[in-house]
Length: 77
Image (tube, rainbow, N blue to C red; front, side):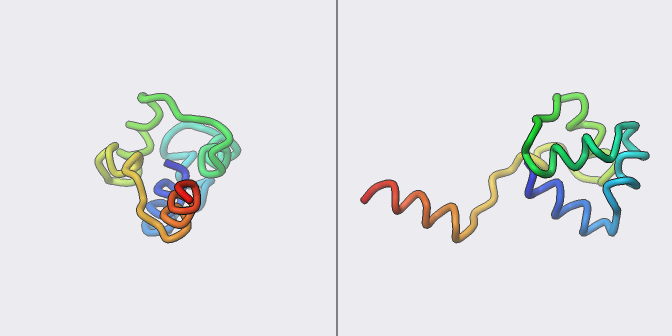
């Protein structure tokens, strides 16, 4: 979720402060979610998705990246 949140926030040209204000949370909490230091509740997930104009599933959808595929391959060696 952290990567998707940051990507979608940037795509919407929003700062953490702007998103936090729209969602009714602190910018520090948004930053913690983006760093994967905390997990957002389903309620918060829905509020963030609404503020970003996306379906909540978009926030939790797995991202296929070269680094995670590389890690998975290394684990099978």
